[in-house]
Amino acid sequence: MAGRSKNGNGNRFPRFRSNRERLNALLSLFKKEDRVLILIWADPDALASALAMRRLLSQRVSQVVIAHVNEIRRVNNQLMIKLLKIPVMKKSQVAVNDFTKKVLLDSQPTHNPAFENIDFDVVIDHHPLNDGWQAAFADIRPEYGATSTILTEYLRTAGIKPSVALATALVYGIKTDTDNFEKHCALQDVICFHYLFKRLNRHLLHKIESSDIRRSELKYIRLALDNMKFRKQRLFTHVGKVPNADILVVIADLLNHVQEAGWVFVSGEHRQRLIIIIRCDGYRKNAGRLAERAFGSLGYAGGHREKARAEIPLENLKLNGDKTINTLFLIKLLKKHFKDLKNEAKKNADF
Image 1 (cartoon, rainbow, N blue to C red):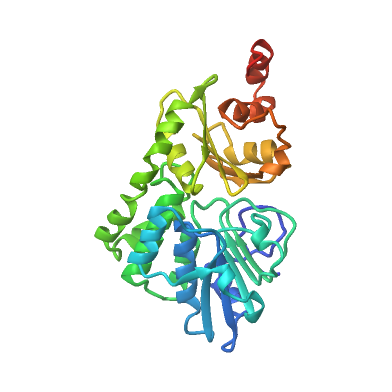
Image 2 (cartoon, rainbow, N blue to C red):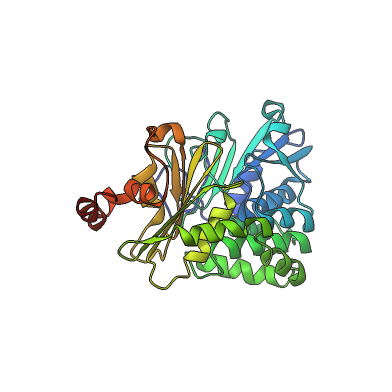
């Protein structure tokens, strides 16, 4: 196994002394006749990283295909793909076994059931390292704010100058995952951002960033406000069934601006799953750890210190006929992880 830098999670992967050594180890896995499949959960960081990996490999292998496992419904992501001409297709449209090499970016095989039964040759990610998977090459750097930064370093080390579209994509990926550098990031994120900024198209970037909600989705913001409850500087709201889970992310990011809210929990139902989006300041809080602790046994859960997400199959909640999912139900799911919520539940029979 080859793989990661000297900072990070123990001695699971070999360490490299330089970016050049790391790049050489990565490229040594690929041959001219290889057909490469890049799999992602499509968000700005993953899309940009996939476009960069495609550029890195384009002259070294016979084919590179980017495929996503999720439905791309968020307006920003759709516009990013359209304006920057990112060639992506659904995983269901490709035969995974037809490819000689598989690459996973901005995620790890245990992060999503869609990745679990695939033997990945390469995994590059900036989320905390998870157990339960292997790869011929792994580069996991949780100290970085974005996988786009890691891929930018690969491009620079390889002497590849990104096109305007690629630079714009990578800048957007870095800005999105670092929340414009207000959240977790490293000096390398800033250095790569500065390098890319001179090459991007600012008009395209602004157009992508400023389009994040459809008119038809405004009603879900109203529902979130109507159903909102505060408990000890924690904001909870459930908006019911939604046409796509990305609207919950938009709502959570909006409510995270509320001064009195130290934690934000936004939930909704989509495709027989309860989706929970978590936000906090990440200073003395850890949203990813809370998500795993609270919801990991019920479904998928994980994320960063400031941002996290959980997806729970409704069947795992074992709902009875008289039990409905609402904001109070969301609070009940979390009460055992906050002692003061547990005490309030004892005082209030309707809690």
